Image (cartoon, rainbow, N blue to C red):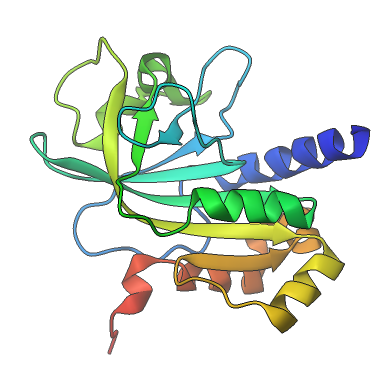
Amino acid sequence: MRGKVSLDLLVKSRLKRWGQRPPGVKPRRGKESWLRGRPSEDETRVSSPFLKIPGSTRLRTLPDGLWLNFGGTFAEPFVDILAIEACSTIQNLLDKRSRFAPSTHSMMCLCPTEWLLAPITPTDPTPRWRTTGVIPHEPFNDVVVPVREMRVLYGLKSDHYKGFARHQLPHAHEFFVPMETLTEENSEENPALRELIARASISANFFSP
């Protein structure tokens, strides 16, 4: 249990260094507004965005890392997401994959009021809601936005990663990386990891002359 807690803390400490925009992500067509939803700067004081199905008040998906790219209009907002999941066991991987599996129902992202009102970073006092471009005024309630597109990056321990790469087939929205790469010092500067995240960008599906 102690090892799992230590791994969670290590992963979150590394992901906090990735900034408000995932490292290596390519620009999409149209306006962009990236914010890191998880882990937050201070998880003891400010609750963070989470994923849910419409109408659910109990079952929530809380990724280790969650980046939100807001888009759309005031009348029809949406968010594209990049989720990071560190999986210490195969059972943990199977559970987390099931949460992001293709489905006939929608996925929603709930952004708590206190998170939207809080400053982007300790050095930038701009409240998050102002940078989304799709929230017209200061929110007084939680804001729920439909997820248009998602990409998920799974971090696996070395032996699990090798076994999965040899025997399994990822879904189109899934990407995998060894845990050692995800948790290494200055992982956000790793060229190979940045290239992998670039391939996870929606714009990577389009021809670039």
